[in-house]
Length: 222
Image 1 (tube, rainbow, N blue to C red):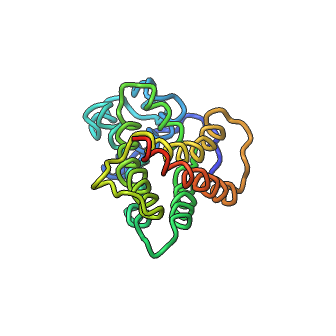
Image 2 (image 1 turned 120 degrees about the vertical axis):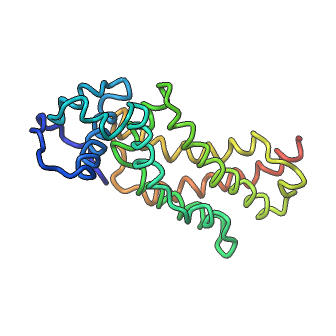
């Protein structure tokens, strides 16, 4: 697993860098800076840490908001696999297999210091990174998984009976349970297991055991 990076002294100015290289340098340093300081961190301080002028940042990113948007694209969108939505709906596999495989891959992508801390800091500020990302999770994972569980249990499709928030929250509970281990590790800095594969699979199996019994009751109560 990726460990919390060790803070280093201020970097000396880099000269003779091509524009694309300098932009990449600024973006990489901004990711580390915002993960440590949150989005309240000032770009002037970021420039000082990099050993460049404040105006040099704005030659590549016209505003702090533009820089944060690039951070979002780099940290979140680039790590979201386009295969995950199809995996959740692949009925040649059991739902348990699909969910387990997704969360095992997901953990490999998101259990990382910068990813988790930027995600949390965004949720506490006026930037909508967290909200936008969770909309992707809901649309491509949570709601499709709800529909797949209905299919497995031979219950009414969402075309006939729309998904309820109650059943959607069942799957958010599974998602939150797994992600909370990352919060414990990178935000609270409390011990978590080094090997998470068995824990992820256990979480999926225990979730499906309860949801399989509960979902028919939820639909009947509507």
